[in-house]
Length: 120
Image (tube, helix red, strand yellow):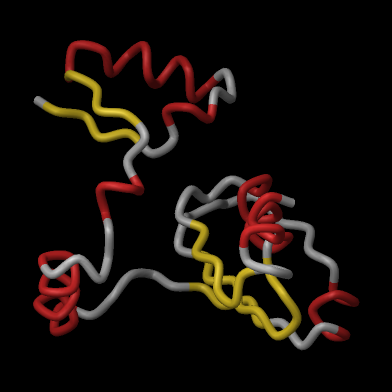
């Protein structure tokens, strides 16, 4: 609801990078008519999305396995100049000594550690 409110009706494109069925469905719910969901996060679980909404609202759902090696220099440059803001994607930085606690939190479904970086 918040994304739809902030964007005046929904996002044009939503990237889902976690891979949980719940977050994929949540990202799908943020889209406006004609929106595109790009699923980057891996999930072996089935995902339930409304076929009627996809059809009637002319939406797209596409998967992405990453990018080709030749694309990396361009992506790195986009990060360098600030076109892609990777720092905003990270919610926590954890020392390696806390990795077991973070994994336990994930197993319990605590989403606060989903976008964490482990620092050796």
